[in-house]
Image (cartoon, rainbow, N blue to C red; front, side, top):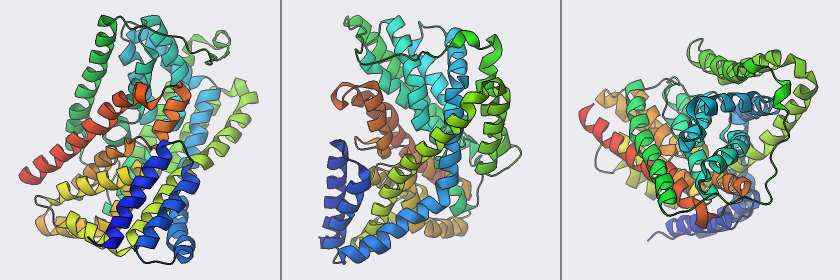
Length: 433
């Protein structure tokens, strides 16, 4: 076997192991990249200064505005109570007896409205904690429901979602956020139905086994004064969400303009809370740096992987797989998303390396590039949620649950089911389209 190919796998395993142990990817990624460079016969220092930093910086240059405004938007929605008011209104509508749906639906609505999934975790967890306590369900089941709602179909499959995982393919295929709507709807069904049924089954099983809610002694519920807000305040959560989606998909504005519009609408509705508006913008701006640096570090690692000779071997395997180019793309994006622990990072690496070849083949056979867009987006939400994924680590840290207690539910709903769905869609559309 090619020594540099061995180095890629060694680097990946080391990256996953160290991230699983809770170490920061900011230093873990360049360390693992150095391992890949050594096996690939590259100068470590030159590779770090060159390939690694170019990959990291390139991602920042391209996507920092979206990360920055997304974090600000989410924080304004959070600190004004807009997101919580909307979530509470949905809970009242659904009822606490349907605890799983009462957690999943607000997560989906917020992520479809453009709020970063990292922000959604912090906003939803306190509400989910109260819901699962009222339903007397084990607290360890809550991370699975949050992950399914926030890391799943509204991130990759629902037509028009403003999440970055749906925007990246646009620059490679010349498509729009509404790409391949029929395939998108089928994907929502294939992932949404079994994922939700699985979570409901887990809840019923817990009740049957007599497992109940156990308090987290370290959890402190928010002292947010809801009584000071008007009864219609849930609109302050809904209208900014609608604004972002409409601006992006109907008015056809850039994601930066769409998010700015959402921020402005939220601020205007909450103008009486002017004292928290500036602090929320400050906190959102600060929080955006950590999110994009974690993802960019993973992209930097991928840039080094691309630079070693073994990557050409991997590329050849991907491009010469039996079946359609859709299946090839599904495998490539899944593998690299899993390798980097990042949906957007892994997809960026895969498409930078292979999108031009996929597009050329699509033009030869008359395949609409929208299908390439949607398969790439859906596939990015599969292996990305391996144990070293940043969002998974954040969710478990916030909920104070261990991988042993809660990761399996996350894995089934956001990893196993999406992988099966993305590969199945790629095979079916590759045969009949």
